[in-house]
Amino acid sequence: MRVDLQDAVVIVTGGGTGIGKATAILFAEKGSNVILCGRRSDPLQSTSRQIRQKGGEVLALPTDITEWDQVRKTVDVVLSRYGRVDALINNAGIAIRKAIMETEVEDWDLVLQTNLKGYFLCCKAVLPSMIEANRGFIVNVSSILGLSGTAEMGAYCSSKFGVVGLTQVLAAELNHTGIKTCTVCPGPTYTDLHRQMVGEDEAKAAMLPERVAQAIVTIIAGEIKLPSGEPLVVDDQLDYHKDRQLESKTKLQIWSRITAALSSRKNARD
Image 1 (tube, one colour):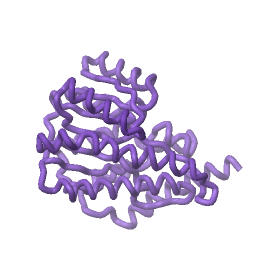
Image 2 (image 1 turned 90 degrees about the vertical axis):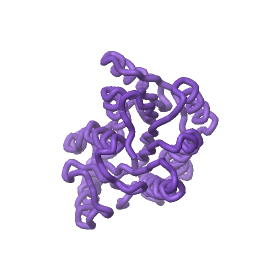
Image 3 (image 1 turned 135 degrees about the vertical axis):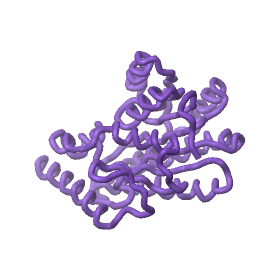
C-alpha cells in the first residue's frame, strides 16, 4: 500500500508543534492537502502560515481529540471539502513525569485520554470513509518508550504501549482491506515535550523532528516496506528499522540513555 503524495488528503493531529509540525510541512512540500488538528489554535495558525508561504495547501481545524463530537465534526469538514481521507497521522500527545505512587488519577486519565483514547477516536472517525474507498493509511506515533518502559513515566509509557497494541489490532481487523496501519516509535526527539522531560542541555543531543517526519512520509509513500501493524523505530543511532523486532541490546541502550537523562534532570532539580 502506498499513497500518491501529490494531492493526497492527510490529517495530522498535534500538527502545530514538534513532530506533527515537521510532518505537516513535509507533506505540504510533497504536494499534499494537509489538515492540521490540535487543541491550541495559535500553533496551528503559525504552522499554516509557514505552509502557505511556501505555496502549500493547508486547513487548520482546532480540535480536542479526546472529544468524540469534535473529532467527528473535524472529519466531516474534511470529507465535505475533499471527499476523502488518504492518510491519518495520529501524533498529538502529552506526558507527565511522576512515579506510579505519585501519579494522581487525574494525571493518568489526562495522559491516557490524549495519547490513546484520542488516537482511537481519530481512527474510528476516518475508518468508515477509508473502508468505503478500500484504501487509506493510518500512522500512529508512539515512542521508543512504547517498547521499553522506564521509571517515572508510567502513564506515558502505558499510553504508548497501548498505541502499539491499538495499531496491531487495527492491522488484524483491516487485514482483508486496502487500508494499512503502522506505528512509528521515535527515540529522543528535540521537541517542547522532550525538553520539559529532560531539560534543554540533554534535549540538544536529540534528533530533530524532521528526522521522524521524513520516516513518516517515506512510509506513506511506500518507500519503506513494512508489514501492516508493525512498529518502526526511528532514532539517530539507528537506520530505519526493517526487522520485525528491535534487538534487545539496542532497546536497552536507548532505554538506558533516556533513563540516565531523566535521572540527571531529577537530581539537578532535587
